[in-house]
Length: 461
Figure 1: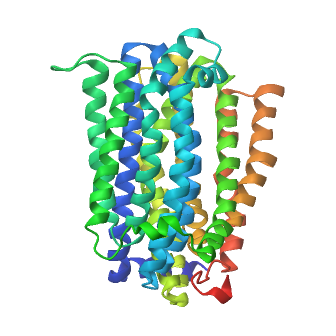
Figure 2: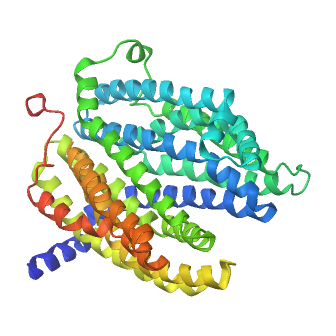
Figure 3: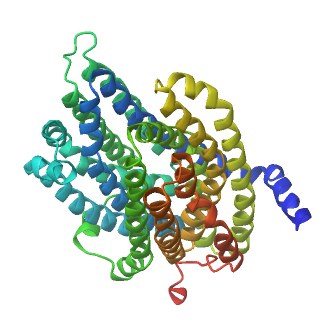
């Protein structure tokens, strides 16, 4: 077994074609993920410089973004499953039809988020908190940021189809430049630098909306110049029944998985939120650091999934299986390196976090826990979200998260925090075990190779 693992690891480094394909997908996507994490962190950091209440108000309001992103993640994973395989098969018309369908559905749902945030922001904030100052600040943010919910839905679908159709670098460039623009606008509009007025919460909302608008316009321009891939009016007016059926067959479990995971992840925050303000502060910083460091893990999963999907769609099933084996070995290596990188950064993070002594002690322990978490996150992102979904095997992730989060992690976390009242770091350790608990089941399921399936072959669907 050890010799076989070493052989696959050396094969990863020796196969130049594999390396070039992987680098062209993983690095742009990882950069995109990193920029998203940086912009998300910048809102909290800059508003906290003004007022803790303003930061808290916007943090609560962005729970709407979190909910919308659960839906968008499901839609883009579902689109990726079919687009990657049909592109590998060189069936461009099928990609155009499924792209138009997903864009139409996504825009309709995101339009509801837009209208709700614009028309009744105080009602939404009233569900999230009973503090008047937080309701007022959050409502101001939601009114101004509301158009971004529709714009984000459109841009994410467009970026997804570009990544799956050989334009990952272009998609990353669009997203990264717009994120940098968002970061710059945050700086000048929130704090009021140079000739710009100090808009604080309104500035954060305006920066997001302007950046998302620019992203949509750039995506539209990129697609119009694509040449091979076109947005045809007839594809919006008439649905392809077979493709629509296939889309929901593979996407419905992903959507269920996102809901199960999203609510479970929120429960982790609720558990930590009842352990005191110092635990909340430390957990917030640990979450930001974790999101920044795991970008390469997420890029490997997304890029690796596209590679495997292209091979499956082209009918090269053996090659797809070989790529999957190499990606799994590489995911362990990336997880270990990410954990070591976090360990090296730990002293610097502790010195700049500006927390009190108790919260700093909590953060120190949480960062140590995050080092092993990276290995599980890397492997599971590559297999569950990447390789399995590339072959339409989306039900496993739904079942795995349902069982692990709701039958193990959340009950154990609640029991340890509220019944036997274990120390904060022990509770954090327990709620961070979910990615590690999944690994044996993921390994067993992977070895069954049920994900090696060509979704473009109608007899297999």
